Image (cartoon, rainbow, N blue to C red; front, side):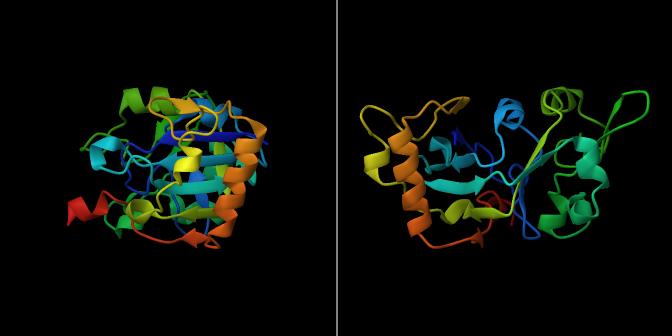
Length: 202
């Protein structure tokens, strides 16, 4: 079991997308999406620019993986296709990529597109580096109201569970075990609170 840790720099409920009973990571963080396997943990922590360094945004166990085309076509995830005229959770849908028979990527009008709805080539290139979506039915998402991570995990024999840039995944086995035990002790699951950035949108 590997634990991947990174900073959620912009928490809109897009990456990750914790809505409709399933947490998905389908955009951003291509290196994590390429590498994480079923049974691994992914945690996102808050950013220092938002005064949330050291706080959890979400934690999920990867319970399934699939390609973008599989995700796009899967009936379970049709609600995660973006609808920019809908509610916030519809507008920030992350089911935005599909590949045609010629092998070209299509990007839906979404949070990662230009304002006029046209594809953003930079985001397309970055997101599709890894043709892989991480899916979790075992997750907790707090958004802007996440718990503070105990100091014991911020300096665990010299290891800090919180990343600064990119991501971390080379943790001692004991640290991963103890951190997961702490997460489980919180006894919360599923969607717990709104994304931090939503308060700035109102």
